[in-house]
Each structure stands twice: as C-alpha cells, then as structure tokens.
Length: 335
Picture 1 (tube, rainbow, N blue to C red):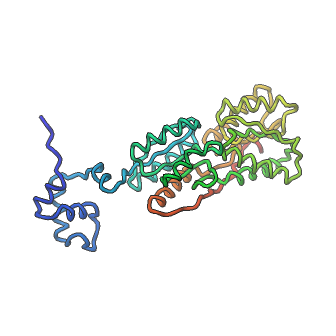
Picture 2: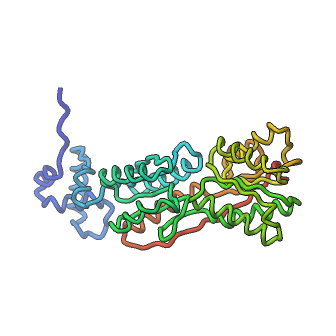
Picture 3: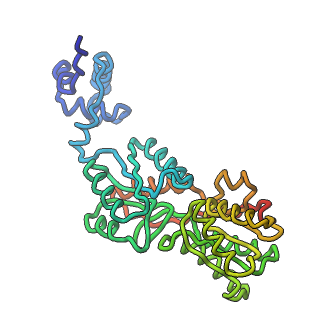
C-alpha cells in the first residue's frame, strides 16, 4: 500500500483560495504579529489548515529558492582527537540552535586531502566552512576561498589574514613558564608539537620568550617538534632525554603528548615531579585523571564562537578574529 502523497504549498493555497506566496510567508513566519503577510484571521486559517493536512515544509525546495542549503562544512585534522571533537560539539550545538546542519570530515593535516574535502563540501552546497586544521605552510585553500569570497572561519589554529577563533596560546605558554619558574625549575624541555601550526608556534613561543625574559640561557631550553599525539610525545621525550642530563621540567604543548612523555620518563625510573616536572596543554579529562598540570583552553566555547562568527559572515558582516582566555590548572605533576 502506497503512503499518501505529502500535501503541497500550492494545494493549500488552492483550498484556501489564497495566493501561494501569501501562504508561504505565513508558514515561514507563523509568529509574525504585524500583519505584514495576512490579517490575523487569514493567518489563523492558513495555520489551522496546514496542521489539519499535515503540511511539512520542503527544505530542499526552500533552499533552492533562497540559495541557502542551511549546511555548514567542518574540516578537522582528526575527529578522534579529543580537543577537535569538543570544538566540533560546540560548532554543532550552535549550528543546531540556528537551524543549520553540520557535515564534518578529516583532512589528516594533509593539504591535498583538505583541498579534496573542500571541493566535495562545496559540491554539497554548504553555506560556509569551518576549519580546525589550518597551517602556516598550507595556505592555498584559504587564499582560493578568499578569491571566491566564500565564507569560512578557522578554529583552534590561526593563520595570517584569516578570521579565526583560538585560545590565546601565547599567553598560555607564558602562564606555564611562570608557574615552572616559581616552582624553582631552571632547565627546560619543550615538546612543541607539529611544526607549521599556530598551536605549536604560539604555545612554544610564549613559553620560551617568557623564560628568556627571566634570564634563562638558550642552552637550558631544549625544543623538539613532532606530533600532538601520545606516540609522538614519547618519541619527542626520548629525544630530549638523549641530549644529556634530563631537564628539570618538560612542557608539552598538548596533553596527549605529555602522556607519551610520562611513559618515557617512567621507563627510565624518573619520578614526577621530584626528578622532572611535567605539564601539558588543553586540560583534557585525561590530564585530570593522571594529575597532570595543564593550561585549560575553552574548547567548546571556541566551537560556538566559530559558528557564530561564520553566521555573521553569512549575514554580510566582516567579523574580527577572537582570542579566548587560557587558564592554568595546577596538579601534582609540577607542584
């Protein structure tokens, strides 16, 4: 048995003896009390009949008329990453509150993959894009979107001349440097994360520059780059520890890299924080679970504000980039 065909806007208008545009406007804005589209009595008739006939608005047809799909594309390095997943939750929550649907895809931090994902999302007629995988050395996609005047916002990472919502990572690095100095630490290792990303550049830069302001010589600050995950953190820690005496403190620019470093230190029988103070960044639940000192970044808020700035762009505005405030969370790994 076939399901009854859905009632159309045109059928409603014919039954009511009204113009289809009048019916459409009332159904699109049923809370309008100004009488712009119809008198209160006519509007009530339209709404009552639409309810009786089980009318449902066709979002695809509506998007064709308005040239909007109400879809937002989101590209992240890896959605399995807790930080990016939390940011995406903020994006999706804010999008749903504004009637948008989000589509998320992984780029694996690869420029070619990012370009393919962007084109696929554009084929789906997304209204705008949000990126969590921006890199200083991979700018061509953003420059192309600028040439197309296509709305897009960056979150988590920033690059020059692009609207972004990020944590004030320079300030976060400074907070950690001040804390470790106040704890009496005088030699330092930095697990700086992936080169070419603002999260690596800004967190490491804020940390190192503050230590130099304190008079720490460059020879007492060792910096190793790698990834942001646990395996990369362990490899970086092994490299730091192979360069001579262990530093008195190790700052990892990501909590998961710090957990990897913790494994390397424990394998050598080192005590935390007696032998080496250890700290991370982002204050994920895992950091609390292992008593890791960390810099908290407002991940969920970052996603919400990213979507809100994109909505401002879709409305014709040109918003400014935003830096959100980091917080220092001190635990037993440094205290």
